[in-house]
Length: 404
Image 1 (tube, rainbow, N blue to C red):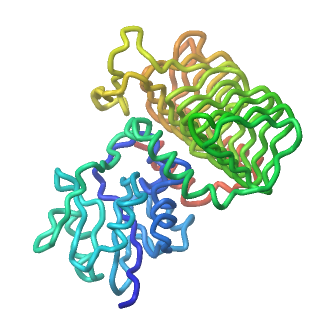
Image 2 (image 1 turned 180 degrees about the horizontal axis):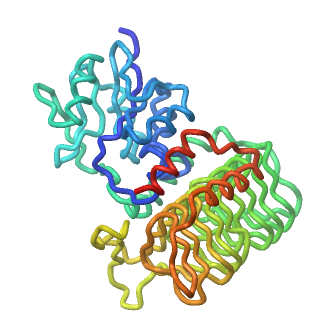
């Protein structure tokens, strides 16, 4: 029997605030990889289609060779884009699914299912409702990510499993002189990465993977588990603490702990970032510092956008959720569990707001909507500095968001 085609589907049940304004759920970096990358890697399959919200279809089509919102003919293995725990036993169960069998959570949500293309199209048209006449197996210890803080809550387990998958790809025989490694869980530095002298790589609590093209500057301490992505730069005298993942082409400095930087973000200077999620093209000014713990040590409540009520994250440690293209001025202070919408600008002498709308420009005098033409021009210039084009689909999406 021929192998099925791998389809990553977004069932639309997750709410991730600004993090999915410009990307689909399968493109969220939930460990060292995105959920889509992890599915392809763990299952050793090529993704043949992505099912995503219609407003993101053009953006995903620009970034992927796979079909978008079209089910290819033949047998399909559909995997939920919100499934982060796609390793080991779960991956084996998904790969072994027969036709018309599904893996579900105890509440009935589908983690993965194998269908022929006709039935898959019907299920997609039915907005991924109940699967009838299907044999199911319940995964009792597996969860889907529903909110941004679920990424933080599962980060330790997901990151460790990802590093186990990625480590064999990034082996080199020796490190430069005067790079100090201690611990026994493993340091895996790609042959095309650079670790400068007088750097400390501490793998006592978990492995470290430094991807191709990455540079780690002198007098930096990196503690595992940690992933430093392709072409990322960690400036000298930085402290990268455990459960940190730095996406591709980020430039980071200061102190970072238990945080996810999606990619192409700047946090070049001193300041603390902890238990936080940072979108692409964000630029955190010098001494921007976040809070990730309430004075009461209670659960952190988060308001994902100005029109919704705050939600209990069930987390005692949670920093800000920072959307794409957010910029903060020097000395900015971001509150516990705050949420900064796509394109927000912060230039305040006091604390930043707990929740902002998109393209909001906050100063001490007032808060105004950023002119979208000026915003587009600035975004295009910022991206061009790293030889990245602001594509027509992304520009159209930004303009549509600004018009809401």
